[in-house]
Length: 516
Figure (cartoon, helix red, strand yellow):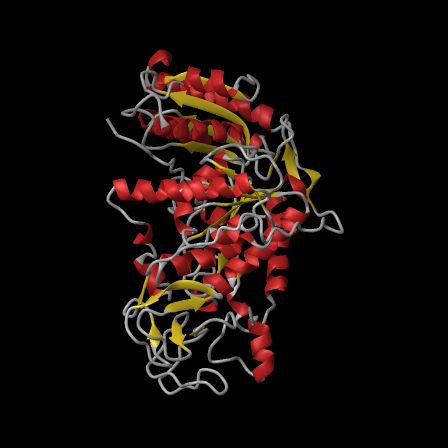
């Protein structure tokens, strides 16, 4: 792949277009191109205006011919495309595609880091390390959601939280399920893993669990099966047994004060970066994402893996068509096969629910220059860097082995991040081209802008501008910048989404199965 800085240096100025791979038959417009602009030295001129981030044909592409970007197939020409023409939804379709999974063929272990990176975190009795020290109010069912929020609001009004300087605040975790569902099967087990995973997430210094009492997701089941029994840091009650709303709020506030005192006993201390577990996401992607923010995050991912940390790639429906890039880096065939099994499950899942895997990209993605799910997936996988694929996990399944892991999830960002948090993520890194605004308490979220125009427009929401890669900043340098920001945020520096107060409505467990 030709890097953007190399292209700029060769021409002596910022190029009109970028060729991402020698085998590509489309070029990328890093800025809007007017008709008549020469696309590259010795190449054709644009025969129409090309929006920023979009694709333009570098030569004649015959109807039915495959179209390549990143050196990979992103679809098939629906009609003959002339040199200099805009390549997008009007002339590019999915077509048929087959992947060569070649398990482990491209496996290249990364060398250990030469120097140890460190951050200041909260060491838990389990040995895991938190980047934040919140008190959580978990709910087993939607029916307990309002009461959980009443408890949190009453605690904040009481004013005693200021007496516990090591506590970052109280986070009510509410959702829309927990009852009206089967008590067995994929749906129940997925929700069970999610709630239990939040109970074990190291960013919670203590937890109060609140239920209604008669729901399908019973608190005793959670306690017995997941050993949430540390009475100093974990307490629980049900509204029905406690005596109703008022009595539950009063008792809940009293319990929170006791939990705050316990959580406050733990302060930040210096620990190796191997204790970081970073969930990687992309949302509101655009045509820049795959060659600016995503590969820069991939560099940061490799740096953390070299330190012995964990990075998580997810969003199974958004690696569709690019999964072979991961199977070829799998540590062994069973690991690669597990990823293929997930892809096949998703093909069946979408088909029986009258959907299709190419329901992506979204309208916003398309306005940003993405056309097919293959193109979007190839760019999304760049977040995974070059590290071996060390493990493949179910949604919300605990991940505690170092390396690059894949966790199954939908492509819907809040739902995917919820699963990563349940799997143990203590930090989220989120790339966006259109400008996603969200945050995910108890886990801080770093927002990475893929283009400079959006970054300038939404600076209050974006932490890092990766759009300057187009201007010549090396991807490796930007990746190092992201990695160093991860260490600072893990040590307590607030992200833009934290400063805005996000995180109150982004707990979205994956609902599978019938609502009854």
